[in-house]
Length: 331
Image (tube, rainbow, N blue to C red; front, side, top):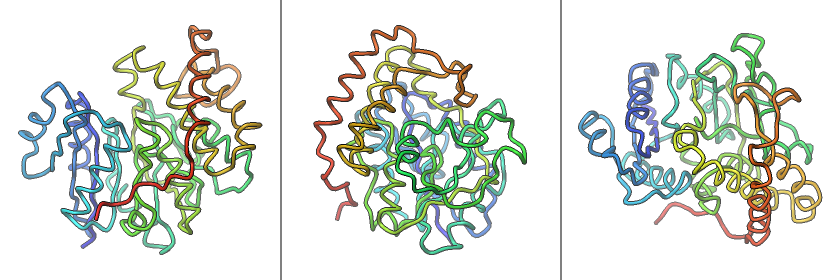
């Protein structure tokens, strides 16, 4: 029996997490799999741990944290819990604003992982609730500038913004990165290259960095475009409105530049990465469910207020020690 531990973060959103859990438990058909579900509550103030424990007692393990540690550290807590309690073959990170509707989605991910011992990470196609493609895999490439651009945005990936059908990029193959909204890792990979990089805390870029680290260490990243997961995207940011949007800009730019420095060097990042990332931080999509094009791009609201945020993010990124080792499982 293959043990798959699913790690889900929750923060003041038990209703959304319940929808995710219900779809996971009902719509996952994988006869050879045993699911071990862990919900890490990231310091919620809305009684989420109590409510979730009452509804899923004995079915889901609830790990309550006293404060919000951010995405990477929160996931790492869930990974460490799962590894020590269940000894899983795979760890699957799943955002709480996802919904599973395709019965064999997990079977397809595992099938891909088993096909090549060098594959360390597998991800599915992500679909917006309105049926448009959100994440559509771009075949593996080695052009440095294309890779640097991918750090900033998945909006140029083929198929993004199209209605999900056979023409919307059902790629099955090796890719540079997959999305952390639904990302399955072999436990052997985690033991080899460590946990998510919490130096990118509280959020953004952890999935990209982890995929790049996997490739750098001789592992492969695989995309199953015929496995589909619905993802609302940015639920937490949108729920809490403007109070988090400015921080999102800072975190996105800072993390992108840190990752670029780590994998492409100081000078490439300075000359090419900063213009790319700052432009990405200053612009936004009119409709997040569509791809990047002239008609769907605009300056962010109150752009001039964004300028000091961008400058602060650049400064923070270049005073970052990129040589620090990523965290590993505790002994």
